[in-house]
Image: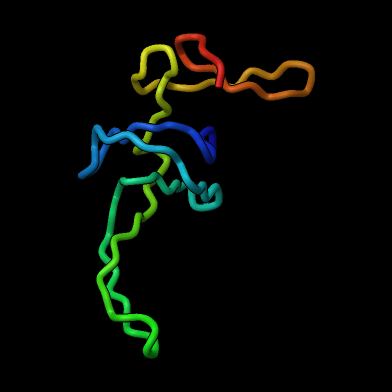
Length: 100
């Protein structure tokens, strides 16, 4: 998976297509990412004792990795990525040539 935590991404498919956000968590085994402000779901929470009231909370749900693209730092548009291996290190490079 070429997308990792902290990357700025744009959603390219689904109900949130066109929205941008930062990846807050990555789930490589499931090929999914959690993007801030994208794919929000409502969760109904029960009251827990006297301290907390019952309420409806909005939480983000994961998005499949194929539905997001990394934003190119030069053009601020979605771009594909390739991996360049040099001296045992991996560097992610955008289609335009920008490094991440």
